[in-house]
Length: 60
Image 1 (cartoon, rainbow, N blue to C red):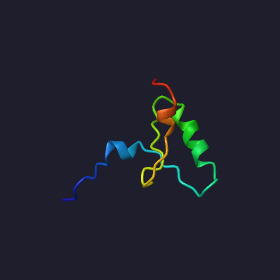
Image 2: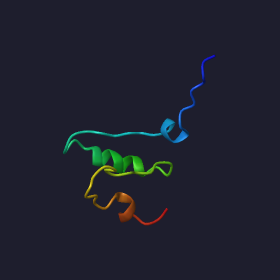
Image 3: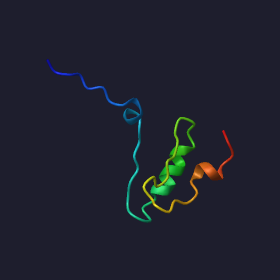
Image 4: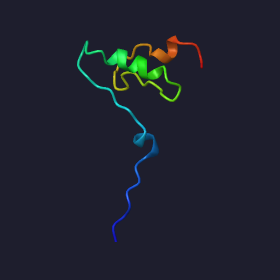
């Protein structure tokens, strides 16, 4: 019997935006984050993270 695969609900609803430097990925992330159901995780693997858009905008 084959085990049924249930994807992680968080991953099933994820949108991953990736690209090279200066390819407007930051703009795309900022635009997506304007929708209340989106949350931006800006450069999660960067060892020297900068402020994300979440820290610059007032709470919703």
